[in-house]
Length: 242
Image 1 (tube, helix red, strand yellow):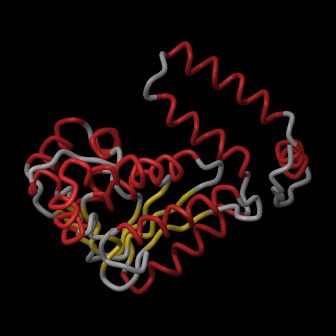
Image 2: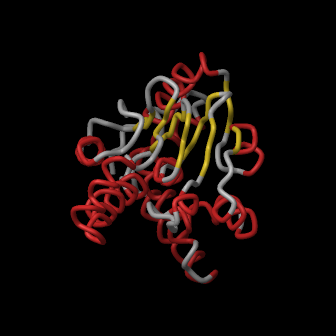
């Protein structure tokens, strides 16, 4: 993202880019990041103030028009998505990051939920995704007492998977993304769907889904080739072919 906050133009451009990446079979992994010192500061409040004056409650149509499709596409696209959090990650920006499958933060990045600080409840799925990441008790504290927290806090609480020096973030993200792109994308797609559905499924349903998904992936060229490679003591090559 090239703007520090999310105005309509930025949200439209981001949604278009994410949608294109989701539908392009030539793209096997996606990196979401920002520029400069900001991953994203969340909603553009100046634009929001204008929308409130002009449209009142209609100003919140952006949730259905932009934020919900964005986080849904990030969370459900059949390829891994990595958030490389280069700096400030606030409000809906945190929701976008949590919709990604993996998160790496730069040392010095700062986070905040922000919403209750302006008299709102979270959007962008944050009430669920943050609770799942850190547990209900800590999520309640982070949402109701929206003080900033550090990249180290985010790592300790399970919001990000690793923290690296700011100068290493781009290289690390590229290396991780390249590894994912060379990996078993069909298995990744199935795994991210299973992880998402596990939150609302019963234990018997989870076990049944795992058995069904294992059988389906077991019939793919990726799996057969990887087993042969293991037996031949060579590195497997994944093509994403069924």
